[in-house]
Amino acid sequence: MRLSQFWIAVAEEFGPALGRTLVHDLVLGELGDLTAEQALSKGLDIRGTWLALCRATDIPESRRHGVGQREPKARG
View (tube, rainbow, N blue to C red):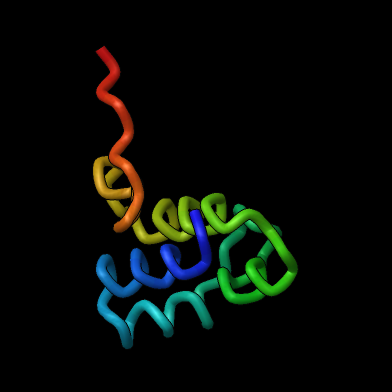
């Protein structure tokens, strides 16, 4: 996942304003008590940051692939 795809996914999932607020303010214990913004600025994995944000906000697994990303193959 590229950073541009991260921001598109955030905006599509949460809306632009709420998405920016969550990335800036929501502390993610999974990422060492960093916000997504802090995690990205420290160079943490973009996709991992996206997934941590999704888990923290209870986004269903079916929508965690992110906009602009290929949907995961069905397990079967």
